[in-house]
Length: 142
Image 1: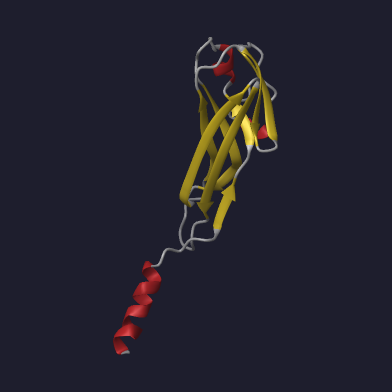
Image 2 (image 1 turned 60 degrees about the horizontal axis):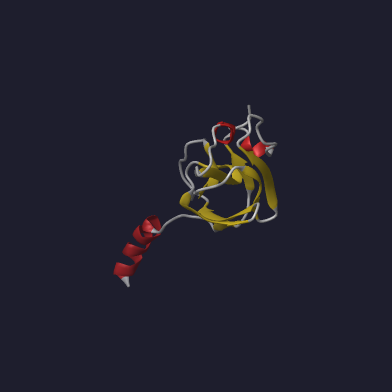
């Protein structure tokens, strides 16, 4: 019993101090306008699904994945992501955008609806005109 009393404080310190998981299965669809403008037939293009604009830079167990399928003129991005809030203690006061990168290979030129859950972006490949993107795509906006 004495050994247990001595080990308990040590075990509490060693236990991971993470909050409950934050899980996402859709987000705003973004694309770099320079990729749209330079697109050529057969190129791959990468879209980003933004789940949250700002999570703690100390978030733990940050995981994302993205499966892509193309059906006619619709591109489906089945993106998922999760992270845990940082536990108590010191943390740098920075935030990071939480996103999944989704590469779509071998596309033909044309106009596509790109969907992540209920979120949708219409993009014409190629186009000198940038697509109309959500505010969460601010780092890509001209």
